[in-house]
Image (cartoon, rainbow, N blue to C red; front, side, top):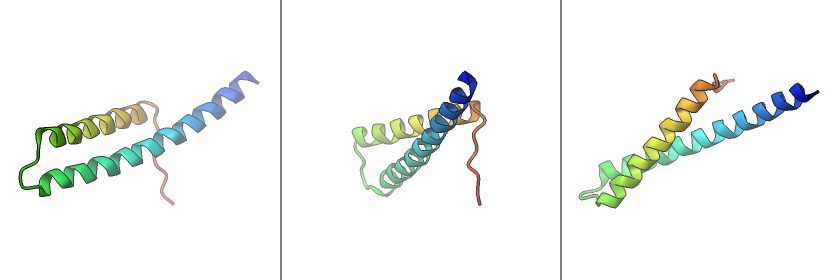
Amino acid sequence: MLFRKKKWLRKEFDHKLLEQLTNMKTRWNNQKLLVERSFDPSDEFITEAKLAEAKYFFLFKEAKHRNISIKTK
């Protein structure tokens, strides 16, 4: 009975991880485009883009470690 709850919790947190991963990917892509298109980006803006990239790759590595994949229909 304890293992059933554990499996259910793992599925729930895997789903949350995938949601965070997709949200962070869109945020990173948006910030990367803004930096590329801006004439003279500030250091703060470049730092935010790099931070978003680091967060995305951290979530990506965690998903890879858990063997989670996005299932396409």
